[in-house]
Length: 395
Image 1 (tube, one colour):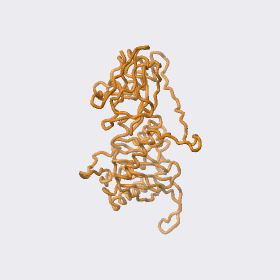
Image 2: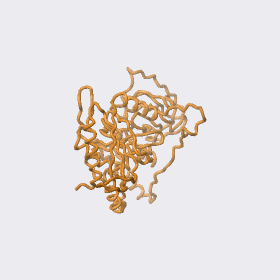
Image 3: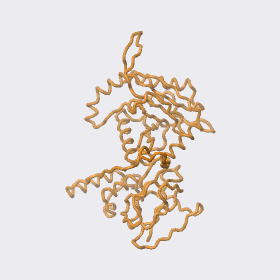
Image 4: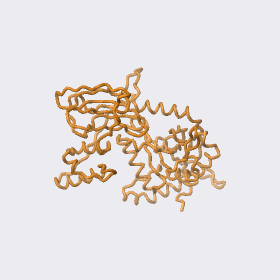
């Protein structure tokens, strides 16, 4: 019997998705839970696994098309099977279906990459909510299987070859990718929604640099690389605790305080920029923040983020200094109220106690929504960030 692959609901607030890339073509055989296509939302790109094994009989939605949740995308069935898909109107559209029964996209991908059969899957006991099979469950199964076969399962790697805009012929119009279109729409909407104000402050980084160097070997033994972004995140968290209004959201009905500090970390990827979120970042130590930043950045660049990992942010940190920029005027990531941009750390000549000195300095730019945050509050917030960095570690 033919099985429809429909546009899944990849988040509570997501009502549509864009077909980014078909990983299988008509006539190809498909294993159950094998990734069959990429779906792009305004949040993230996700691989969608097949809910049944068989042959890809039809592709109903072309790459680049955006459709509502529940819209049939493809049909899987037996070779030569005649399939008939009834057009779906908004009134008769099927209810949103999960990506896979009791499986997240990441788990489904692990199942496909490691060739876990349906029979093997039934032997895996899910430890998640409601018996959901999680990443740890799959990893435990793979370790057990590797021990039995004495052949550890490998994790295949690959590259996604894309044409860089510079390689296009001169004068040719380059179509917008779904991610680039989403970024453009978000940036325009943010500027139209919130009156942006940017304040730039300068901080000395000598104590942070000394602390990092003193503990680098110890952290390396623990398998953690602590970059300056982790220290900037700590400083932001301290300032948000002191000035919670910067962590709040402005609405037409009034100000909405946010109980958690969910820190967005801007990550540059091949096609643009994505902002994964460290949930409840204020509950993490320096090493915990460093691990979270590294993990989310790797997931973003490898296209392995889940919708939940890019939602719920209350404040964003963007480090354009890694590309050599001294300072900029970042745009607020709606519906947040502020974003901090960090520039390159450079040694500069400054005056210390009426004497000329050379110190490692950094420009910090806070862009905030002036409907909610006044200039005085923004500057006091930045002074708290500056104090945290210049007196590090604060005991």
